[in-house]
Image 1 (cartoon, rainbow over the protein chains, first blue to last red):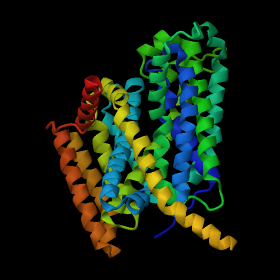
Image 2: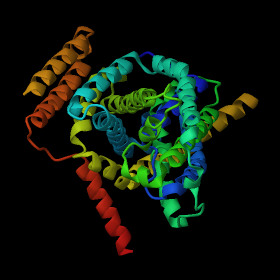
Image 3: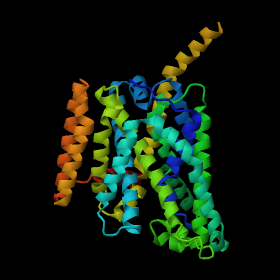
Image 4: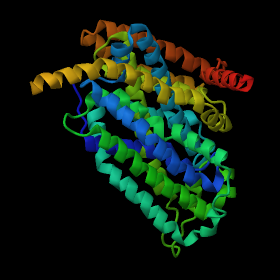
Length: 368
Length: 75
């Protein structure tokens, strides 16, 4: 079995690009309207301890991923149930992300082209990435992360001329309960979606700080997403943001600098495409690792083709329409939160009992 | 009908490129599992393309959410 190694820096870059995925073009608000940026800051702060728990889970047992941890620390039966739940969530997320992308392409570019056409090309790329493995993916992502962030910041600067800063007022315009609801929504989508990286658990380089990578990753992408939201708010305002499915695309399409720099939304779309493909690939790699664990197969890559084909099928059939897609994403946040928080929490407690003792006794022996 | 042809071609290509080499590498167990998986997904895919409505997987999520709401409401 080939072991793939990702450094801490590469993990950080993967997390940044992964989180920028769907949120980059959507980045609207579900409840809190113009105060969503406050909820976004709150959700990042709430996400940090949970993400630290993910980091602890990743390094508590060296060389093991979350599926190994499930069975090692919770026993075979509960381990299998948790593996199955995690597996279903990863396939759901991988397919939903691609469905979001095909919806975007159909709504914005090709209204008459069937969504399957876009999905086939997307999944062929994902299949190629999965067959190559995590290590080349991490190396590739490391080369483009700062480019993507740079493009994002450039779009914010270009939009400065169209901004109406009064759109942010009145400042405490929403109830605290509404903002809390928005925070919870933003927590489940996108910040805690990095639970998928637990599937890559055994691939992290020894000596590199996983904690740092997780926290820097989430904070950097959080800042970029808040900037994207504020840009949308200042440029198109809350009312238009509520009317469109992809506010970031709408706001970038308004950029016009002296009739020289126009139609720059294509750049935004390409960064979105990169992030989406990478996000879906990571979800499906985790799914493959889950199937490999359940079927007791060593090489997860043999399941790349069925995972991609299932993703292709589900991306079309899972949601009836665009409204159903966004509706299910909003409604499904409670079961999703259970997978993102409760399952890792139970596993962490159990793993701490098992591996914590082992690690402590090993370090005592070393000291003696 | 066009998508039946496209998907059949896609699945054949995937089978020859990704699944069949498993048999040549002497990974019999993996070959059997992956072949079954790909065949089942192919049948589902073709049924969907032909317009036969199968229950959506998100129905389970909706059921869970409504159950959760009922439980929360009863409190």
